[in-house]
Image 1 (cartoon, one colour):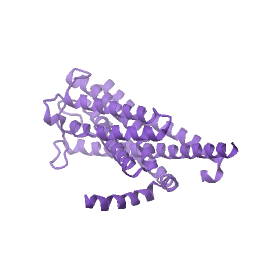
Image 2 (tube, chains in turn yellow, green; image 1 turned 30 degrees about the vertical axis):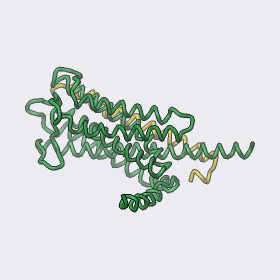
Image 3 (cartoon, chains in turn yellow, brown; image 1 turned 180 degrees about the vertical axis):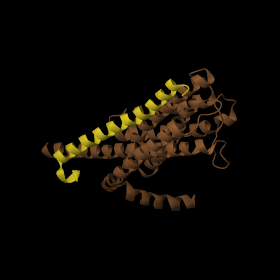
Image 4 (cartoon, chains in turn cyan, green; image 1 turned 60 degrees about the vertical axis):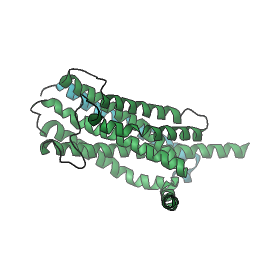
Length: 45
Length: 255
């Protein structure tokens, strides 16, 4: 495969960027859900 | 004018129905697993097809495979900004709180995909053009788009009173829309090093079908990923706002 370094770096970035956002969103969501459940269990449902 | 006056309140009522935060949380909670699952599956198929099945280009060799991540990222950079502008419009006209939150959450994801577009473009440009960067109209207008995203991110978080931030961010987002046609037509209006559009709405694509199909699958996959990220972030933002409101009500009641 020609230009392997450029291709590998491009695909690595294409995985890292959405994965970083995805993990951040999942963490934020789980934290918000737990805090909401602690403050008001009815609102968390 | 009369038609707008008639249509706008109706559209507003329809949007208000879906913009109810509680209804949004229920709807988004049901859609999220399917959206995330389909995003992962379609993107994985697209990237595998692009890397291992699609042919190398007769001129560019295997470097053409960068196209399968660069082009969807570029499309989403522009489409994400269009979504941001639509939310800003809804925020200014109908004052939807959900539109404000969605706009604030689209900003970072859009900036991330624009950065991905710029980085992969640079990684494609170096072996093909012999340069990481050139100040041609397409590259420069996408860089301006990236700065518009950063400006929006900074502006909506710059005020103690969130509503002022959302208002200022909405105005910036709507002013920045002028950059979208500049990006689209920059390769036609100016003599650029960047190639003109290969796929257009009206004309036949000037690309082999063996490359077009994996590109379309990657574009659908990336779009689903973008949507899943925005929905997840907006759900978190709605919950965080509810937490703040509950805590504030509790502290006022105890005071």
